[in-house]
Length: 506
Image: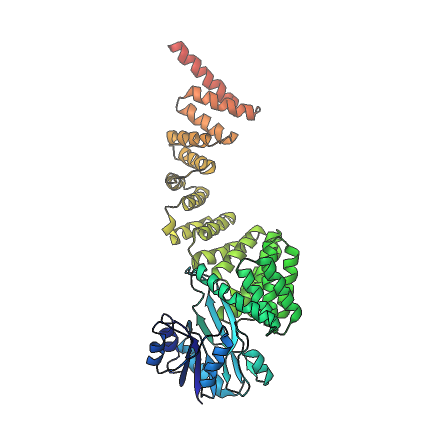
């Protein structure tokens, strides 16, 4: 059973070698239609044994695709772009699918990383990229060309698959992605005007306008697309997801929730609309519902999306660490600290981000799991010079009455606040460092510290250091805030007596 690879290219010398290497041993024939390359694309293709044909570009991707399809001689056709890759682990699976008789076309799952950051979000999209070469099957649409409509017209059986195609084209700077959107925009406008694949073209045009920042115009197009129809439930689900996401950004939470429910009605197994519902509940301070939504989303994610299975036309996929963080934060705001600590811990361990680790430590402190904080402190010791780390670990040491170690950590803090200086002062008091205690309290006072209990302790320390004038002044301030404080009254009187005695001695 012969398999032909069908491609269209232009100036793809950067990506083409990787694509063709990825299908070596899978395809029996490579057909490349070149639409005007000025680099070494043609020579690279020929070096892989491809049949290379020229095609004059006419602002019509389907025309170029159909020209490539025309030259294929296989029983089956696989079509790829130069910036796509199929791992060898899927080669046997593809051959088995072709021979199995379960479909005339198969949906392959395109996994597209968005942006250049190491942990960038990626999208999953399912397209019938592998199909029998049947009479009447051809591409339609000048841009975002589709084979699905003609497969449906010839009653081809389209089946799902587990094959993942890695798409590298969006793993670029924002400027490059925006330039692609601008290139497609005029082609989509023309397609809509000609009412070619009208509903689907409206969907692509609206999505492009949202990407280009013309949000209201884009949302209007998407609603028109829903009214026009002509596409499957997966596209409907994606449209409602885009509407929901933008309604949330605009502050219309109820409209966003309604769109999420419509998206889920169209694609019940997806994770994205459930994540979005969690975000909406968080904004509405409905934390219990947010926790349940994120837990559901995580289950869906781990049960399908994380393995490359999309239920919508474009399924945004979040790193697992992001879902752990969302669930942990929702649980913490709902007061469910055991769940919060569990998932914040997973987030911290998966991606060692300062905010994630700090949130994990804080959850453990809320649970009074002080020994666990200290074990985690060893695990995350690479943050041991960060102020937040020093403060949170010191809090656990204070609770376990290890005041010396706590004072040592707090003494290394660079940017103190009132609370950390007060804790440092108390630790130094416990270890007998009275001068250090006074110094920490004075620094806190300079930042506006005025807690009567702490100031009372400062006054007593000053008294023990024989600084009777300072003690009297500090404790008088305590009495102004707490007139019934008998201990402060007693030491004010004692300090004043000492001041009088010292005056007589002179």
